[in-house]
Amino acid sequence: MTPDRELITKPCWRPEDLGAPLPDLPHANSVCLPTWQDVVHYEEKNPRVMDRLRAGYPRFVVPPPCAHVFALAQNELCAGDERCHLYSTQRAAERCVERIQAWCGATARTVEWPKGNMYAVCFPASAADAALKYWRHTGDGISSRRAQALLDGTPEPDATEARAKLQRRIAEATGVTPDCVYFFRSGMAAIYTIYRAMVRRTPGQPLIQLGFPYVDTLKILQDFGTPHVFLPHALERDINMLHQVSLGETIAGLLCEFPSNPVLISADLTRVREISLRNRFPIVIDDTISTWINVDLMPVADAIVTSLTKWFTGRGDVMGGSVVLNPRSPFADELRAALDAEYEDCTWGESLILAEELSRDANVRVRQSTATASAVAEWLRKQSGVEAVYYPQFKQSEMYDRFRRPDGGYGGLFSFTLKNPEKTSECFYNALEISKGPNLGTTFSLCCPFTLLAHYGELDWAEQCGVPRWLMRLSIGLETADDLIARIGRALDAAR
Image (cartoon, rainbow, N blue to C red; front, side, top):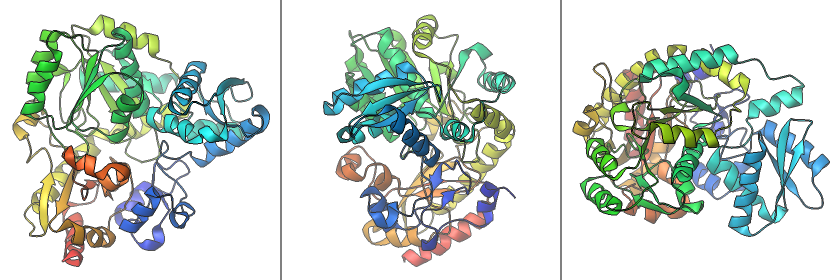
């Protein structure tokens, strides 16, 4: 049994599992944070937790193979107290240099490193936080697999066939031609690139974020100097505001998740589309939570962004992202031209080969997780200790159903809060016999106190945007509904 499958029956949830990679593979995308206090100490960078970590989400931390390669490059390229990060292309490195200057005033520089066929960003030690911020928010950095290949002295494998198969698979699923499918190192790299394409299309004009999105999507808008309007609730009042904001104005584009992560809001995309066509701005939708297996968003999207790290590959140790352009969009030609001007094809070959192999059963996995999530969420909302369950089946279902495929469901992820959360949440989480850490879409279920993990320094603000500080997010794997209900039931008993 592979490590990801083993976690279905033997989850990592006990205090002694702190820091274990999830799954137990060299390029794992998650790490076990088994107690509420572990999450707090992780956010506070307490050595008690940080010294135990053997993995982490690859944008939140520098993966060990990357750190090793950075050290090698630092010895060859850096001077004085300089440190360095590595990027696949010169343009990516130059973007990092620009952001470091903007964020902290430090002067960084790019240096070609022929040994690794990469570009180093050398920066003073005082700019380390700014450099890591760029690494995290953009997904532009080299992958851990590319770093490991350099350490091992192995060449990049030929992924031509795998790439073509992946393009055909995604094109068929979304109803486009293969040339409309673009691949990226990560889902955030895909979002960051389409963001730059929209800015390029209409320089200096504002972007709109509709709905409270995954944290780094919003940070790109907030921290990268582009004018933007944030409409966090994505309900009727916000869509009325969208109409007012875009009247007579040039809008670079609108970003939206369907449904949103983590509170699973399904916006009225029909009305949003009417506004976008009337006022001529493109809509980019992130369908990572619902997936194109469950929904068809092409009627209301000019481009669809997906993190292939999640449901598509499922194992929890492969990074990837895609952008699918809608060829029937009224903005198709200009959006493609802007995207082509920003796009650099540098996804590591091994990642593409693995993504092709692991996605062969994506339809079966997603349908099973979706059905199980529906059953568990339905049970959970009836429990006396539960305050709310956030799931498209129960929230704005009429909006979601407009785009749900005839054989589609409501996705494999939901969030929830408990009653008296300040007293019950920690006890529940500590007792929950499910693997605990960031990430979603894996073959094994994963739970995390999402707001605490993603917005620890801005909890009051997150609550004002409709995201409870005590929110817990649960990604459903391939366990049976009865098994998960029994595990959650024992945790609820402990919380009482």
